[in-house]
Amino acid sequence: MTILHILTYPDKSLAQPTKPVENVDGTIQQIIEDLASTMYNAPGVGLAAIQVGFDKSIIVYDVSPREAKRSLQVLINPRIVTSEGEMLSEEEGCLSVPDFRADVKRAASVLVEGLDRDGNPLSISADGLLALVLQHEIDHLKGTLFIDRISALKRELYKRRVKKKLKKE
Ligand code: NI
Image 1 (cartoon, protein in one colour):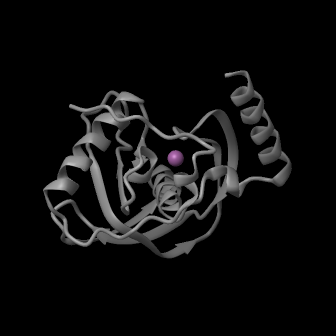
Image 2 (spheres, rainbow, N blue to C red; image 1 turned 90 degrees about the horizontal axis):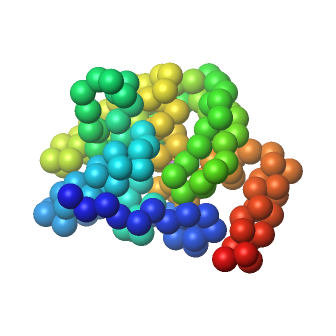
Image 3 (cartoon, rainbow, N blue to C red; image 1 turned 90 degrees about the vertical axis):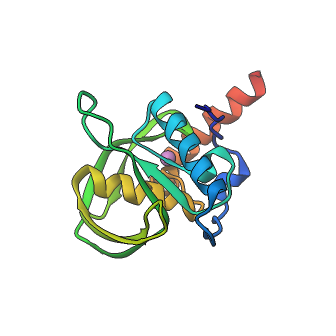
């Protein structure tokens, strides 16, 4: 079990679009294992490979209630095919944006297509928490963080806070 270091804003990798996975091979299986350990250890409900510096379109997530048994989900090269409606993601957060939360406008439901961890096509129709997690994680693959989706004023406040903190260190 390997716990990987999670990159945080303003690391430049987090702002770059990721590359699609060409072959779902052993390297990909290993990174999926490491992503899962890192996500559960954090703990978080979702993690994109780029958050640990692995530049491929892979996300892992688990939205099962904490008491329930773990149910790791993996999506390779996922994309949102359709999205409908609107909902407010209350107090959204991100392992790469520590100590900050904000409400984010998200689609109410999404249809996502991608590959499962064996490389087989998969399509997921989601609403509620799962829809939010999928939108958040797929955003990471485009180099978008949730702070890119909040008001400029709130974003500036956060950026200033990070700059101050980096200066102190
Ligand atoms: Ni995130």
